[in-house]
Image 1 (tube, helix red, strand yellow):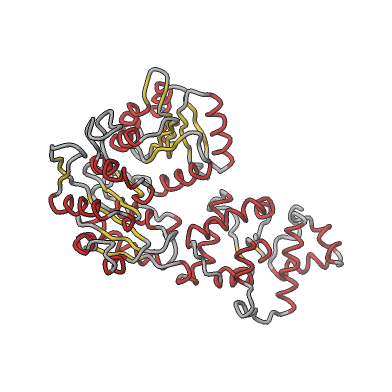
Image 2 (image 1 turned 120 degrees about the vertical axis):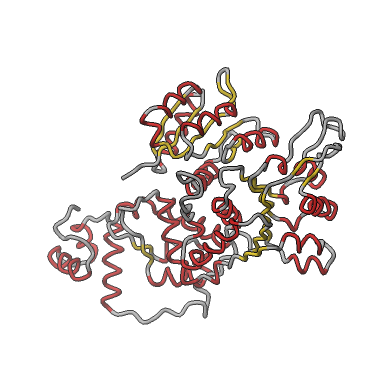
Length: 458
């Protein structure tokens, strides 16, 4: 089994120990360095070949982490670099991204955010060479529906024109944007993702375009904005529908002139990045209401991609749920497959999933937390309906929402035996006592239902 290794570069031993414990629990291997020099030694050695991602502290003894990005990428070009900093700011993030970092995280680190960022970074790990290999499909994009869409994403990455990605919240719009970037000739250039809805309205122009020193109260120094940080790469503007009309006008000017100026500045700065936008709102309705400019809409809607909600992908829900549960448990390819009982699967399919992929993923994380040991210890994991979160279970079993199909006695018996074996951790003697049958009878039924080797270990 090839364990993915993460190189942790931080001068605090406690931080390294904490990250080692967290990452090893999630199935990663960990290499440690307390200085930039030691990190360069590791990446130059044979151990460096196994590094799949780098967690790099911003402030190291006598050195800035940002200055290490270039030599790290030179030694290990396929490993995404994630900056860790206790002093997060837009200029810091811009500088890191411009130098080639994948993302940055603010200390104290949020475990879920760290693991999700690592997952995204490794899913979109740069292939060897330039554009010669197709990036792997991240879990948010697996399934027949998304596989059929991959050709559209490949085409979207092949041209320089804007792409408008629409879909409900949680359908994976940012992951689609990152995949388009990976399919483009720009994939070694920065990918800058900006959630415009999360920026205070009075700071949107400054954050997007930057500002000159003294341009407004509090502008104590020149600041580079996200448009400038994108360079020749890709600029992803999420929640585009939240932009005020004046900012929409400024964005339209950038698209038309391919240039912009910092707030308070007069110098025209060329803009060459590819623009990807996303929204969960109906921009056409917003146009009718006068909240979104028609001319901007048609500038952005050159190539439109709509992501279907999860409730329209019912045939894939069981497949996706098993993937996310395996991911949450850290199971590898050679470990047992996970299945859901017929009733659990139908409840998952009947539930409307208002949070879409994100909600399904969280649901599987909950199951992994509450029942992880039982699943790991079973040679044939079968997830019963009782393990589903209460909200999913309640909505999926409302009157008329689920009509169970008639089950045979053998089906009921097989599921009962499997359930008792899981509850007893595979102890056949104890399972036979609970079932009220002899061990010999239990062995016969294990053979009949294909539930494992009767002569195998308890």
